[in-house]
Image 1 (tube, one colour):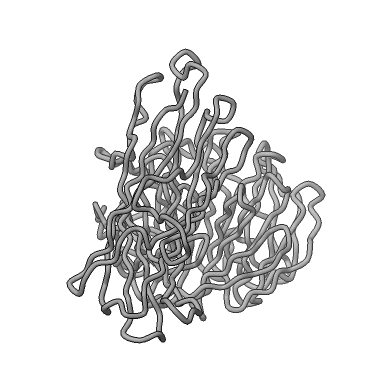
Image 2: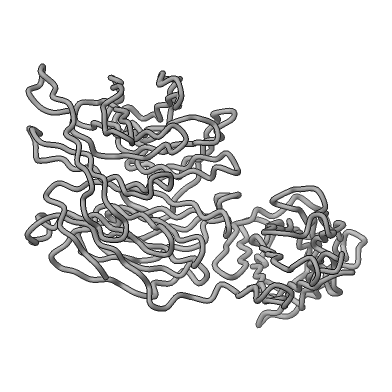
Length: 489
């Protein structure tokens, strides 16, 4: 672990891949008369440049910067001037102030969608997300939010913007194309403050200050997967897509919780009683944390670089031409109720849970859900693939409980390709026994790829349907769905 003092008043951090530097916001206490944008070297953590922000004559303060994000396409930095209800744009090359926007009611966080050229800013007290054109530097229409939006994170490929609300403790999901907002509950969360999306696992994580935990939701359905205790003042978080480690900054606990997203468990806690971590950014396998050491009792605020010495094995694809992990197991659980009313929860491991409503039927009790995404990575050479592709199949074992057993032939599915492209095809739907089909007691194809579509990372999944007779004994039923990957000619 490496730490460097940066002075006092650090708030947030953002990485510019174009310039290979971190940008850090720094602001003094109110009335704020000192505030800077810092360029920081990611290797040495030394300050490369510092830029003073403009003076605001009417308030006799500076246009202090707090939240930020970078736009490498246009080589700019966007920052919130929260206390003045403004958003400002700076030039990454020179640090020059380019423009400020008024009337952004308590702007907190910035998220840049470089693919679509849009900048989003959460306006906490305004209960909306402000939008800006990254090229023209003009303001767009606001997106109303049912609650006080806090942290922002973007699944750029899916076109989904995520935020959690401080006062209503909801996850708000914005479709960036239509600007329609969908809401999901954050069970047990209190004063939710930030979000991180992990598309590879189809998960969204929300850090909650007063409940001192992280809420895990299914990114597609919004179903509650888990709540993970971390520490008092869980304020910021970021996930490493390579290792699957999630880093959580617990401001009042003076700790960083490291969570293995495969198991939804805290695998390590970084402790420093003299530091209150305020923001975290993961780059190239390391977590960079800016802190308020003066709040925690330390001498000066600074930046810390955390590099894990041990990381969970996400499955080594092996050398080109050699098979990597080709089989996995997903646990499927279903609670058969006593009677036809009530809810049902189907859980697929690792770490997935879907709350289901029984389907209307006169002669059966039916449930639906979705398995977590299955990721196939094909890094074989052309010679090793020999003109072939790959296939993914799955087979279920029986559903068992202390009350009895339901055969795997009662489980059906409809496979789907989550990252569509030419050459990758979803397998055929398979109906369960009560729908006249064979079910998943025998191996069924989830997806196939030909030689043209095989290369790279592909995510596939399936919608599940379980139908059981009305006279099935009530109980918690569990089955194992074994998923296999194999090369094809």
